[in-house]
Image (cartoon, rainbow over all chains, first blue to last red):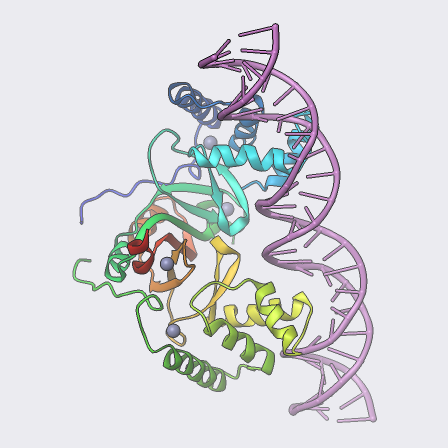
Length: 162
Length: 162
DNA sequence: GGGAAGGTTGTTATAACATAACAGCGCCAT
DNA sequence: ATGGCGCTGTTATGTTATAACAACCTTCCC
Ligand SMILES: [Zn+2]
Ligand SMILES: [Zn+2]
Ligand SMILES: [Zn+2]
Ligand SMILES: [Zn+2]
């Protein structure tokens, strides 16, 4: 340990969001192409909807958008598309909010960690760090398969305001 | 950093569970006494119910038990008691399961981390380690207030079986 | 072509989780 | 005694998620 560099969480800092969306879509399209995944119109549209904002959207929020566009109006439509995106790492579920965000690092194998602003709802995605938990798990003979790490607090903007 | 010792997660290892329950109840009772908290019959009973098992119970599981004992039959009864326990650190919410567990370290100020077995459902509670996340948060100017850390996998028993 | 298999969508219905809002009651301090 | 406060009781409703099955399409094989 020691000199590993932490990096800024993606999504919270000022950035070119149009490029952010275009890049993500591009990576997901390529990944689906090379891995034989079927990025259907509904799935693609749900990804676009998630990409519009760095906040967590509920399945029913997404569904409302889909319905307005004639792409489906029943819960399973939204849940299935979201399930596809989450299963393949193109989106993540935010447990603390019963919601979903587009992945900020699609195509890179990673375990995500989130910084969630309780005021404005914006979410930054970092990479995970669980060294001590892993040690604790080892001691218990526990085999970790998946880790949920969500930090709630105030983003740089909302800290100033409060 | 460096020589900090990781500890085994509480709850997964073999232990004297009767003592585990009695100790927890005792600590909570003392804490309530010294802090002027009102550990009412419903609240105490809900804590006991949670303490019976190191797995996550849903609010409706708890409610069923309460109802069978004539202590209340409507959702708010369970949610309010669970809310009290969580607010004062006597129980924790497990986001990934929409459930609740009794705290394994009541009375000690701590941020919990959980090891959740996907097969048997047992949950171990460790203390948290988020050094790198905190660094990442700092870089983003993010002020962390609360952290959810839940690792899912196989406990030592279930690893052997599979 | 016929037809089975697999994958996606469409739809109904219901399950599971959570809270708003208000009424009533006991306690206790003014 | 009465007004405030904290807790419980209750109704009603809101929100999130899934089971189950029907319909349709493409692919692939006979
Ligand atoms: Zn962006
Ligand atoms: Zn914010
Ligand atoms: Zn125990
Ligand atoms: Zn297990």
